[in-house]
Length: 76
Image (tube, rainbow, N blue to C red; front, side, top):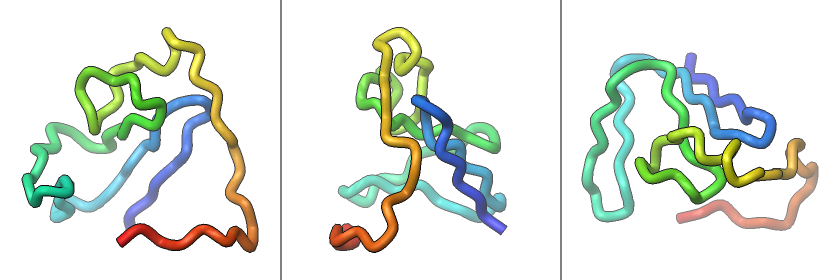
């Protein structure tokens, strides 16, 4: 089963089966070197979409909890 953990003021930690693909908006596939892997959430990583630890250097602070009954719409 796939699992995505939101790290406190850090990246999304993604633990997924071997057969998952990470694809950008242009259809380009990223090579996933190891599992689990971390996806950048702060926007400052030089190895996007992967986390490189920049969040700790820039003092990234994020909302920590999901908001129930949010009116946001899913991305398409």
